[in-house]
Length: 85
Image 1: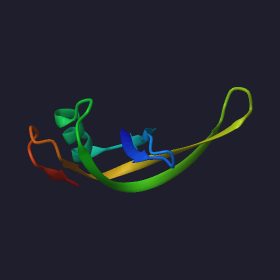
Image 2: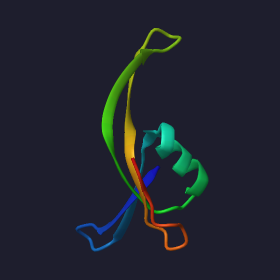
Image 3: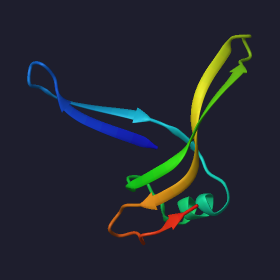
């Protein structure tokens, strides 16, 4: 999932920043995501931040954050308005 933020810097220039987020969904929430979500779909999600780590093949410890999705609210006008938990 990506979130976008637009703002003007101190010079008045418009800046657009995108951040990418890794999501995990199970059960009915995953079914809803598979059925209705497409690239560019607008959604609101509720979930829990999960911090994980692993050791790569080179022996370096790597860290990553995921969002375990508990609820999805479809915001697209074309999609059905539905909340799944």
